[in-house]
Length: 598
Image (tube, rainbow, N blue to C red; front, side, top):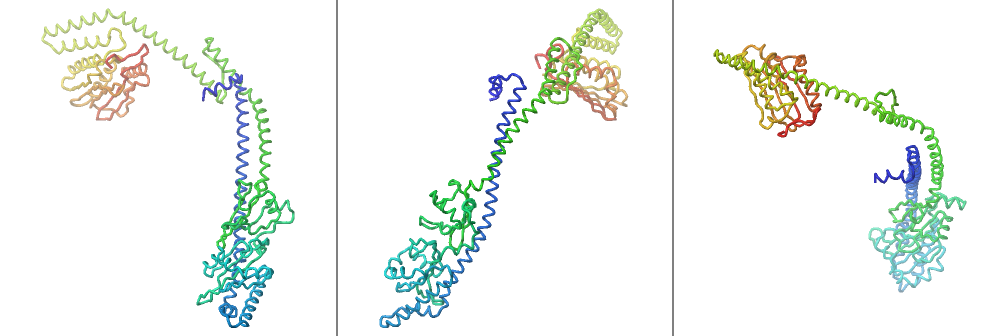
């Protein structure tokens, strides 16, 4: 993927970084601005829908309370019969086999009660009461055409679902979203059914049916307005019978224009969802199970969001134009330090090492300044290595020139050793032979490195001489792991610290003192410790004052770099501890070191 991205500018013929930056900027603008527009459109649409839902959910809840109050008025009207003693007595008296006059009087009374009942509410279209004999007593605007027809069909009525639901409700009012006795009724009506029972004894008297015009719901919803276009854009409040099995479950619609527009498009009222292009808010009425719905076409609801699309396109064009203009103005400030850096690199290739160029503090300037620092540091390192090699050659020359003197010194010390033995003074002989060995190991035939074994041997010879000098005042212990004895280290690295411990730690101490030299392998390093129980010191900086110790520290830093470390710990009256950490394998100034056994 990364290689593909790198190849794109080449395939497009964009070799200059200026053109690549311009192409990248245009690509980002063409991607980010439309993406921002789409996100803005969707977010604004979501906010509009959320606010619309919140607003109309509250409105539908208010309409629901008004609807319940309206239905309560119908319930109250139907329950007036429970307190009408004339009605209750007439409804109970159903046996008139030998009293035709009594039956006519009863029928007239019940018929009159139904007629007066329809006057209780203006919106009651008609009302009917089936007694226990199946006789229908009705009142209202459709009595003449309906009553005669249904008197002879009670058997069919009693088998209908709506009649069964009324009986099962045991006196509780049941609402239906249509005219139960005449489902083909084109008027916008609904029905309330109730099983009438005698209060107290709960004797069933019959079924009361009240058919009410749906215009009674107008007070529950806002007015739709008169302009058809505005009314359609505003949407519509509806009451849907979601539990109805009938194809037409629309009970009420407050916006005829919207309803007619839906009818022309053949949109079923029960399918008001976003897939159909509508945004719908619903509220369920607990008493009837009917849904109070507000629906509006999504195009009308989100009409204002089209402005976002236009502004997004305008913003994309303006942003691209401004970006190109700014890039052209700033391209010189980008190219100038690049050209300067290119010129410096060419001059370095020509051999120039000292520059007066100054770069700015931006990213390209930082690269330029770092490059100049690297050139200067590289120049200084080359000079340092050259001087170091020169010093090595000088040291080798001096060593060759001084080879004659050591032979004379060795012969002289050997003569002292034999004379001391002849004179029976073995201490002087031991001191002479130890001193001879110290010189031989120190010279090391002019080599810069030696083995740990020979370095420890040099320390032992030095301590033998000091033991003869201080008699019983000095006690020393040398411990070294076998695996490090053949490792190579730079020579004369331990003896100066041992000498410093004897002269400055143990000699001033009253009584006997001890010194410990330990060597071991620790991971990829060799660890030496030189420890004494002498007088100690408060400030370890005093250790660096001596030429011998300072010389060792400098040589360790020169040969081993950061991997070579020397640390000092000391307490007055308790002694001093020196820790020397060297890499077992290392790359010295003149090649790899360490020995095959490490």
